[in-house]
Length: 241
Length: 260
Image (cartoon, rainbow over all chains, first blue to last red; front, side, top):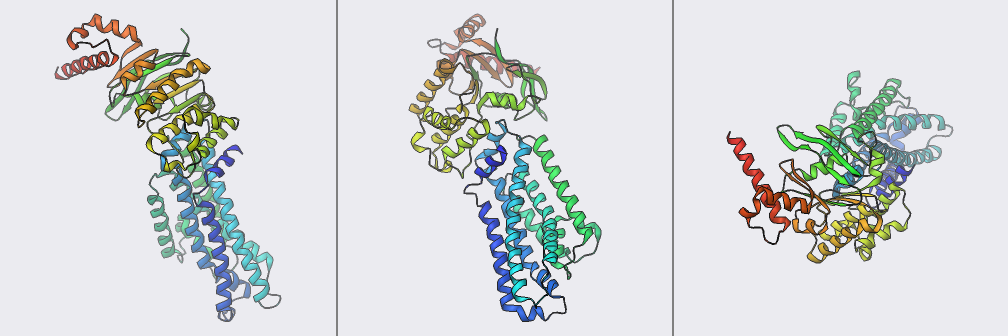
């Protein structure tokens, strides 16, 4: 608990908290604006109203979330490397893997807040703009949970990458490359490609149905744990020299 | 003898380069130990090994009876350290930086003000650390090491970047610390004359090897016996001349060994 409090204090003036909250607000704003401008076109699509609400707005929101995660993960470790503050931490009686886990949890919580804001906007749209009786809260909650889970491998992967490179441009570049390659491969059905964390995050965005894909959800869960485990192991065993 | 830090055959090898070679140090409790050596002698590497920043290739050490890596947290709780350049969070003020360390160490709130006052940084405590001058950053690093008045201080060239009056202030502060709260200090410096004014014991390192360990008087006696003083015209028995003579002799011996 003490490590978490310390980590939160370190975030002051880094921009990590505003970035992810801004992503939530922008995503919510985009959903409102899109539905105001394209309401008739969207509801005219040959899809169930809930599928329209959840799948047709999610592309842009996912991209926003992805960039939010990449930038926030880079920033959360950049402040450790700037001024070599991390060296000071290695000289203090603090658990380095604990520090890593707290950073992961802070990003996870902030991202959850961003996703919650976006989904609140979808709830509002669903209740006011979908045809009478078409809005299903349960379906929205299930899809929100699914898309949150599929974003976790990117978050876990980016925290790992940014913790290993002192130069912030390296993890940022890896994040952009991950996004581009993920976009290029998003429609592929090859199961082996599920190993790509960015591809998993894009799966709900390219789906035409609001029904979660079990296979994708399992792969997301395993990858999140694998990257988190690798990051914790490296934090414990690879010394700062 | 009551030693608080001892090393046995401490060695650090980087691929083909040996940074520290079979170094055995003995630091007495409640004293100031001056760690001398030219650039690249292995002083910082030795200190990094003592703090767990880098793992020894060979050898071992104990700090207050404890060993790395088993007792890492217990050891680091007792040590205030300052290695190479000052480390700080650029996005935080000096006071906030110290508050982070205070929280980790579980110290009372007033320890931050105490540390700021000790290094003369009180009036700049609320300025962002990234806006500090080099000297102020150095003082902040030192304040971080002194926070909570730890029983052991490991300071690697703590006066680098300070102006002459700053060097004088910090020297007086460091010298006063063992008397103030019975701490042990290991300090390295390129300012050999400075170490002479502070240290009770000294260790001289050259190319990773410990050439000498003992009191200043022992060193002077040793060099006289070895006949170095005549060759190098010791001026007023200054440590700097003794030190340079010793390093030169060792370097000459190394060159000779290399030729053979």
